Image 1: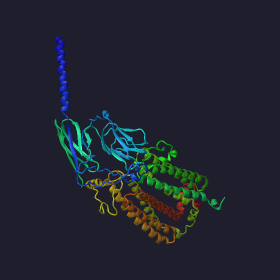
Image 2: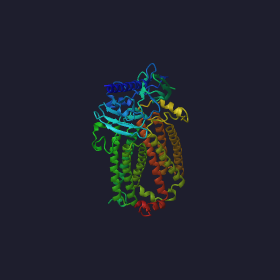
Image 3: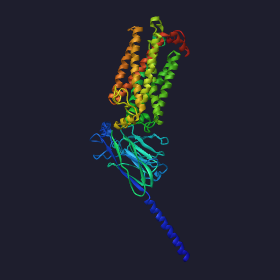
Image 4: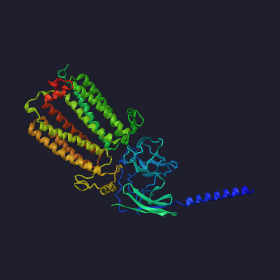
Length: 241
Length: 353
C-alpha cells in the first residue's frame, strides 16, 4: 500500500510537471499584430477591358471590373501586404496544415495575394464555366514551373512547393489578365493584411525578429521586434511617391 | 513538255513556291499575334491540344488565347505539309541539283521549327520562343528565295553578265551589312517580346520623359510602382529598358543605312535598274517600320500594331536578303558557278541547270 501510494505520488508529480510545462509553453509564445497603411494617392486602378470583351467572361459582369493593385480604404489601410518573420527557415508545418485554396471565379483569381508554407498543399479550383490553364511560374530553383489545363467543372489541381519564394506568379494564358501571387514560407510565421490593413502573426516564440512587410508594387519594409511573453505591435506605413 | 520545262523552269512549281511563301508570311502573322496576346502557353500540351488530337479540338473551346495558339499550330501544320510537297517536287522535277538540297534544307528547317515551337511549350522555355521567332524569319526568307529561284526570270540574270550589269562590290557589301543589321534588330525585337514585361519604356520619342532614361534601381522601382498593367506583366528591369534603347538606336542606324543603300543604288546602277527600285522600296518599308515602332509604343503595345511591326520587319529582312542574292548573282557569275558546282551543278550557265 505504501509503495502504491509512493508510485501514485510520483505519477502525480510527473503529471503536474507536464501540465506546468504545457501551460508554460502556451504562455511562452505571443502574437505580432499591427496595421499597414498607405500614405499618398496610388495610381487609379485600370478597367480590365479585355475581360469585359471576352464572350464567356464578359457575360458574368454588368460593369467592367478593375485591377486591384492597391487595395486601400478611405482611412489609408492597405490590404494584400504579405507580413512575415524574415530569415526563419526549417520551421515549416506545411505538411500537416490545411490546404490553401486558390479559385478561378469570374475569370479572375481569388484571392489575388496568398501565402502558404513549404510542403503545404495549394488547391486550385475552376469555378467558372469556361476553360482556364493554370500556369505556375516560380523563379526559385527547386520550385517547378507547371502549366496544366483545367476544363470547366474539371478536377481541382494540387501544388506544393519545397522552397521559400516571394510572389510566385500564377497566370492563365487563355485569359491573360488573370494572375495571382503566392508567397511561400518555410515557417508558419506569416499572414496577409486584410481589407482593414490588419495582420496577426500567431504563436511566435520568444526572441528577437525582423518583421518584413512586402507589397507587390510598393516593395518591402522591415522592422525589428522582440517577443517576450506579451503580444507585440508593429505597424508599417508605405508611401506612394 | 513545255518550253519552260525544257529550260528547267516549271510554272506550277513556281506558283506553289509562291503560295508556300505567302502562307509562311501568314503564319508569321499568326505567330506574332500569339506573342502579342501573351497566348504562347495557353495550350499546355503538344502535339495534342488539351488532350485532344490537334485536328479534332472542339471549335467551341477556341476561346481567348487558345484561339491564337491553336490556329497558329493548325496553319503551321499546313505550311509544314506544303514545304514537304515543295521539297519533293523540287527533288523530282527541278533539274538543278543545288535546288534539290535547298528543298531538303527548307524541309528540315520547317521540321526544326515545329519541334522548337512544341518544346517551347512543353519545357516552358522563353529562350526557345526567341529562337523559334528568329528562325521563323529566316524560314520566310528561304521560302521567298525558293520562289525567286523557281521563277522564269531567274535564268536570265546569269546570262546578262555585262560590265554595266554588275553590282559594285562596295554597294553589295553595304546592302549585306544593312541586311545583317536588320537581322540583329529582329533578334533584339524577339528578345524584347519574350520578356513578358510589356512596354519597358512607355513613351516615344522620349524615354520616361528624357532622351536617355534613368535606369537606376530607385527609378525602376518607381516605374514599377506606378505601372498599372492589366495583363500582370513581369516587373520592368534596367536590362529591359536598356534593351529597348538599343532597339531604338539600331532602328535609327538601319534607317540611315537603307537611305544610303537607296541613294548609292540609284547613283551607281541608275534609277531604272530593278535593284535601284528595290532599294527605294526597301527604304519606304523601313520608314513604315519606324512609324509602326512608334505606334507600338503610343498604342501601349496594341496586339494588331505590334504584330504588324513584326511582319514589316520580316519583309524588310526578306527584301534585303533577296537584293543581296540578286546582286551577287548578277555580279559574280563565275564565283556563283563555283559555289553551285559544290552542289553538283555545271560551272557554265549554272542557273539554267
